[in-house]
Image (cartoon, rainbow, N blue to C red; front, side, top):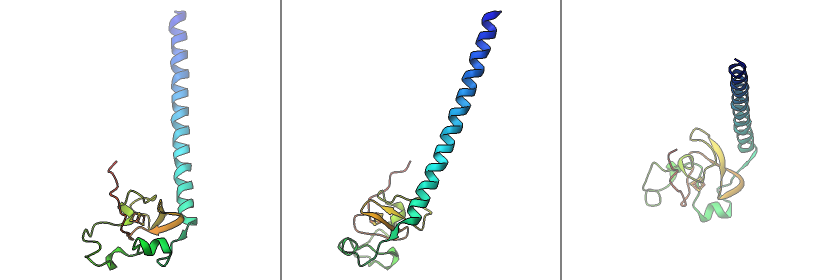
Length: 117
Ligand code: SF4
């Protein structure tokens, strides 16, 4: 009898602990998303005349790039592995331009396919 009661107490404590950790993980995740969004929003937009942007042929609007430079018309910053934002973000960070943001519909010639998750 005593063991059943102890077992229930352990189960209840484990359940509480589990629920608490799931709650903490969800809260941390929400904070992480909020911090990332605010960080991207605070970044200065890279200029197309930035020397690195010029060297990499970066543009804010990929549709303006001649087909000879960008034959694969489905390539945009927002589906590049180096884009820090999500596919629906208009502007977000890029590993090539530390501290700056690039346009989701932009492109440059080091585009790398983002792996599906
Ligand atoms: S590396 Fe990718 S995300 Fe960065 S500017 Fe080039 S295409 Fe856009």
